[in-house]
Image 1 (tube, rainbow, N blue to C red):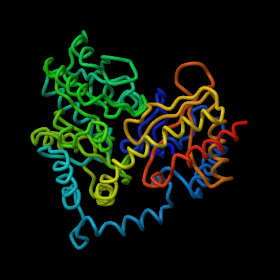
Image 2 (cartoon, helix red, strand yellow):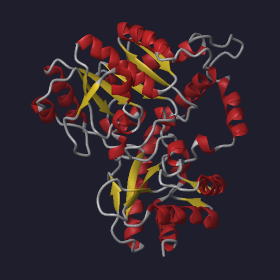
Image 3 (spheres, helix red, strand yellow):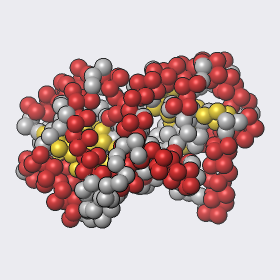
Image 4 (cartoon, rainbow, N blue to C red):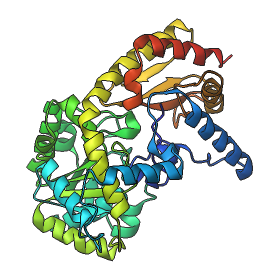
Length: 418
């Protein structure tokens, strides 16, 4: 199932903007109308048709909370709230109460001294990188050109915080230690997005990550992890979250991407950094009066989804392999499942068809068979015309699929391409 919880535009699109993606830039963002769509009313109708087809599908690989009706989401929040906090306590005011409880939970989960809740991940990272620039005396941030701030935030680091970005590599992976060591330009902070979503949710090996961090330290740079999806990296690295987070000076995590929350993010790190970050959060307009719905949803997601992530990652490998087998058997022509095997519970599928053709086939399959294998497809940002990709996410619902189920669904999908 396509990962769609953000409100950004599609992967690698320069015009992409950050919306829910500060959290799972997946559901909302993938539902946005294409930038070239000339008739918004027609696209609204198409979007509603897609949404209705996916909501009604009996079999899915994941059922994103953003696709649920408002009443159902509110009922779920009310039903789960009592399991994560005392409902007789006062509601939060400017960050106390259940918000402070969530912050303490995140600091403990990541093994950090402190954590601060932010309404968006964009704000959390903007503040973190600004604080580090002030402390290092260098406003240059080394990051990948496909990293979230470069693709989905409309140049916010430079426009709002006066930071400058540099790129140690443009390869569709995180930089190597040698690339960090040999990079000609000084920088104060190295930002690593784990996983690098727009390159296919790719991760380095644990040993590679350790050497990259060590190379940055040799240059007297601090290290910040864009860990919007850090939760699902533990299986690939074979390490627990505190050991992963300990490599960095600060870490940002999202609550709505993997955990299915409403919104919000947290920045974790040393106590002194977090106190400074709280000041900048206020200055940036992030000191909201009350945020208990988002905090409650995050706590519920931590309890419900975090323990299941290893099983999602393992099942994604089964699904990816069966997809490749099914596409080959169905005569789909050239295709690519990337990466194979997946590094997390999310991966890409590429096919040599137009995005509209592939999306229509996805919708028709859901409408006609009750099986939603794929969701939206998007034109490749580079390469020959007529090549498109989609993102596949395996969640709780996907655990029920066998490899045979996937191959059968692929065959039905390919039928609708002719």
